[in-house]
Image 1: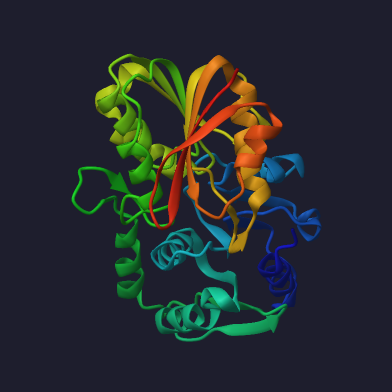
Image 2: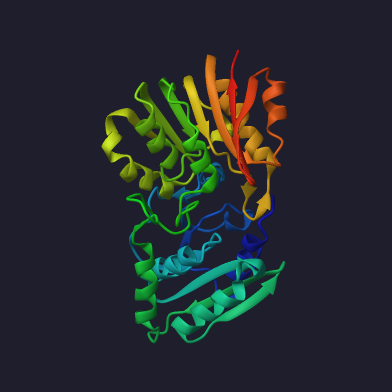
Length: 335
């Protein structure tokens, strides 16, 4: 799927005065042919499918956000307000004196509002509008308001989920509360679950923690998560279960290499801001392939999502074990 904000960012990259800087850092990196001629380009991307695409394109990537200074830092935010402001601060920290900060966002993600935030911190921005997106460029002239960046930097601190001891950070799924669907699934987990278990799309670890607390016969849980930031939170949240857990930064849609007695999931069904039913179906297909004969699959989903058809196409026996006005919990068994 074409990323129009990325297209707009590439236009901004080539529209500012003078040649491209010799080296560039890309926060939220996504591959684009226009970057292929860049001599020294380093990307950071927390989402595994996008990181894989960046690697396949042959660009250099850092596993963690690198330290250092660059004459140009590009930022392609996701959709979280706090994360976006944090990324502005992280970009500022890595911008060399006199350097250029380039940002692009869809209008529907609040591009105009965020441009005003950058202007408030830097004094002046240049912008272009294309593809229903906005790209803005700020040049460090030594007069930027560092107090504003300092406030944004604080948004990166780990925060506790309301009413719990779990920690999260902005930008990851359900960072401020326990997802209601996951809560419904956790409340209805059979205490008879046992053996080797996987949690697909594990997020910050809520379902795995609930399963380990409720099911004494579980010997091990592998947590698979595409967002590296969420996975690091999960490591912290399951530290008390360290002997029973392993953490995998992995794109579940590409399949699993291990086999399991049971698999838990609250499968995603959005790509960016668009509904993508194939994403949830791919999660279920990967889970079914990884289940041992007699293995159990427990999933929660919005009631209108037609995942039962996938289970029936793979000859799994299934039944609905719980539902509320929004969600359903399905128990399936691989015969």
